[in-house]
Length: 66
Image (cartoon, rainbow, N blue to C red):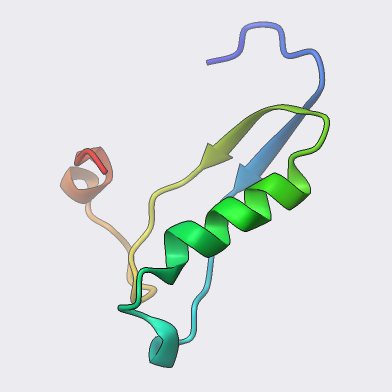
């Protein structure tokens, strides 16, 4: 939690990868690249965990460590 942010905050709430490209380990690489490109001047980046197939996660799944 940032009590007094001094700068911009990048929020990544959705990252969509076409089903044909899933399973190759691309999500961390592409998400990291997007964060590097978009986060210039940001003091923090927030990523919301989500499912690979677009379904809603249960509360237990949200709380699981990555």
